[in-house]
Image (cartoon, rainbow, N blue to C red; front, side):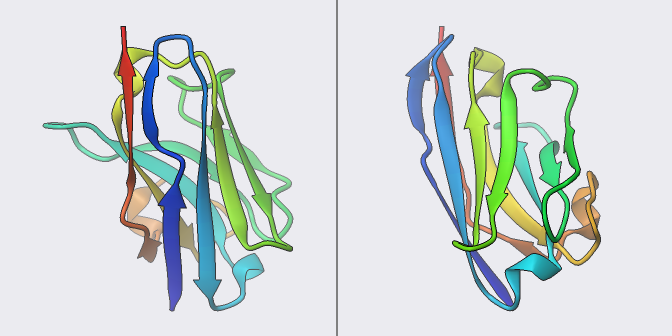
Length: 124
């Protein structure tokens, strides 16, 4: 089992920045590829960013966030981060951290563990 707890969400104006954090506990953190997904009201959950295990040498991003968001991991602290810059109203959603036993994945169905989510609201 892996437990994931997100933090760092909030309300920000368009053009602003936020950093989301995900604290992992349980089984060996470096055994999991990590990802961020988001879900807006009335929409399906969508992929945002992923980082590979164990060292994070590979990262992937949704086209909609490339150049604005950066995913990283700190294995010493069992943490994953999502630095979000130049935020847009379309980024408003509940953001979820997830863990997959795969090296890395952009597909939500391959993730076995999920956090409860943290809300990000971007106003224009």
